[in-house]
Structure formats: C-alpha cells, structure tokens
Image (cartoon, rainbow, N blue to C red; front, side):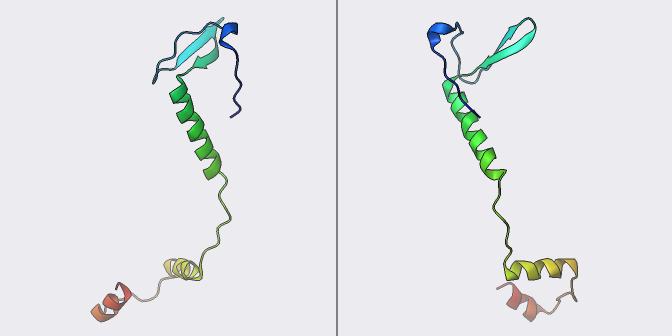
Length: 90
C-alpha cells in the first residue's frame, strides 16, 4: 500500500474517531474513506503481514518429513504391539 499525505489546509474532513470509518461520497460515488490514525496503523500492519505471508520461502522437507509423507500415502501394517507402540511414542 502506498501512502500519500496531504496538508489539512487543503481539505475539510470530519474529526476521525477510532473504530469508525467515514465514507466520503460525491455524486453517489465513494471518493474516500477517513479512518483514525490508530486504525490506519493496524491496517498498514495487516497489509505488511499479508505481503510477507503471500511470498513463502521455498519448502524443502526434511528426510523424516518425506518418509512420513510416503508412509501416510502407502501405510504398512498397523502397529499393535504395546512394547513397539511405547517405543515409538516415547
């Protein structure tokens, strides 16, 4: 998101209130939205977070992850021996 700043002397706006967005309309068209500076900071932070998570790093599974994936797709015999289960989960 690009932010542009304008001098308050050049526009007339109502006092923004936190948690309230004021839509500015002219000729039945939305022209602007006025938000409180704290709300804007939250929106900007969310925009940054979304930009970061939308560009994930390349995924390189470990050897154990590859084996687990292969095992989940083509499972072997179920493990029912209590000693073997204890060994696997301890």
